[in-house]
Length: 123
Image (tube, rainbow, N blue to C red; front, side):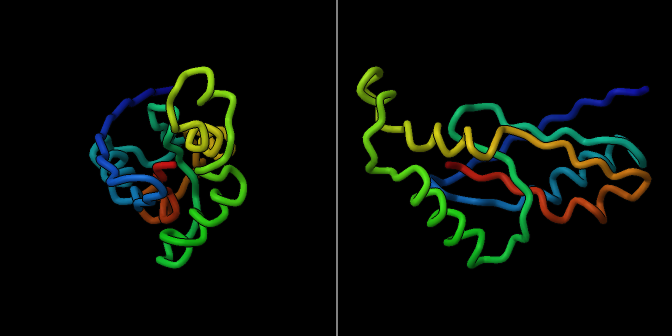
């Protein structure tokens, strides 16, 4: 089995921002001449996550943030913040709920066509 590694850097503007990374992932796969296999997409850091969903503006720019706010409110009381004196525990909890990566298995299909739902979300 062949292993290929590629990296890309993404800058996010702030809390709750979701961006579509499909083209970046598809470009990496195409650049490395991968036709079949598994792509592992991962974000480094404890306040960002990767998920899959339809990148529709209402969902990406409102509904996800509203759901996160219900589950782990920004103004909630967190032991982490009391212990460390910071104010990002809500983002760390949200990241723990979503996860830092995913492995879309494309089983013989062309990656560029099938990776239509990969998203990076800053929590």
